[in-house]
Length: 80
Image (cartoon, rainbow, N blue to C red; front, side, top):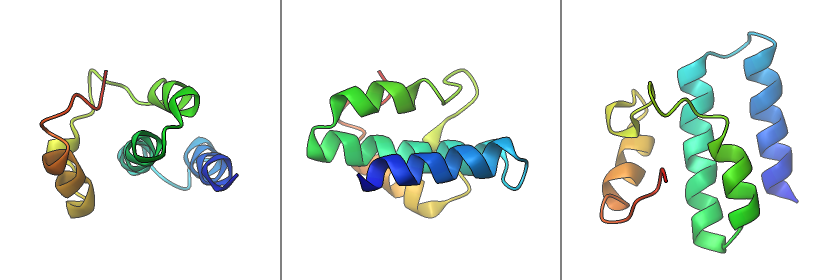
């Protein structure tokens, strides 16, 4: 499953220090959107646990794609 491969790539790149927290959280947020789109709710819960919800705000991301996803999904509660 491609989702698991992407998640593993993000995990590895973040944990070995090649990429920072915001990079990882942005990509996890994008994976959450994919989970919602395709009904992968069990995967969604696991991925959600990897984002620090106290510190991460997708609306303030430096990645414009993430901000766009957050705005388009703002009518729904994506981080619950």
